[in-house]
Length: 259
Image (cartoon, rainbow, N blue to C red; front, side, top):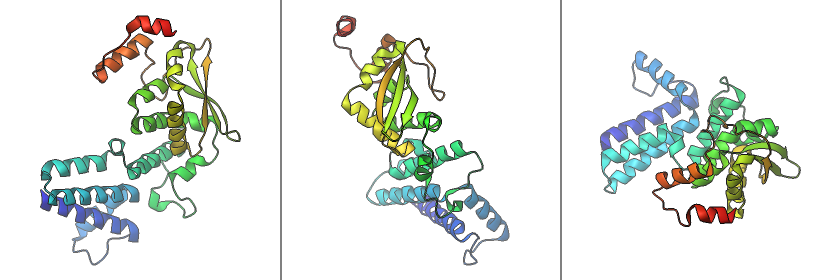
């Protein structure tokens, strides 16, 4: 397994070299058929994706040298390289932002290596023309970022909401909750929750917008970005108890008293 990891690392480095120079170097000992295959593989990746895969594989080999179980260590490294959404590193977040950029601008957006030099990356692109339409389009990615920051519960709370107005000059983002989601709005009010949302918006959108919450009277719940429909307060509590093996203290009487 360690030899497989070393071979994989060498192959990934070859692909990165090919992407960098734009052709298969003559120093590579490959056949004509392999040359075309390597070129096609290199074009299928972005520089960022290759760099992450190289870093993950190299780290796995180092861990194997320290005594970690080889097969599982390499499998986890390959899984993180292939699925950036399960990797909490900054490089993985940058790759996910790159994907968001492609979705926002269209499928024909070039890979990272093909972007003009005056376009440093996905965050810079995202900050151009910050308006309600752009933030609404990136809202699912904002919720993902809240979840990746370590707050699965808070991302569930915000799944019921949607951006309704933005004032970049005042650095304010108005977030609306359906009238039936007053419980979610209360859970989003604490300062820590506001700071998490602000940081997630800054990471994805590029602007540190301070959230202001409002209830949208008379508006029915709308699922955001393909998210599951908002749960009722009782359903949300039951879901949290099930997902996190939690126990409820106080019960329905306490919630009625709070209301």
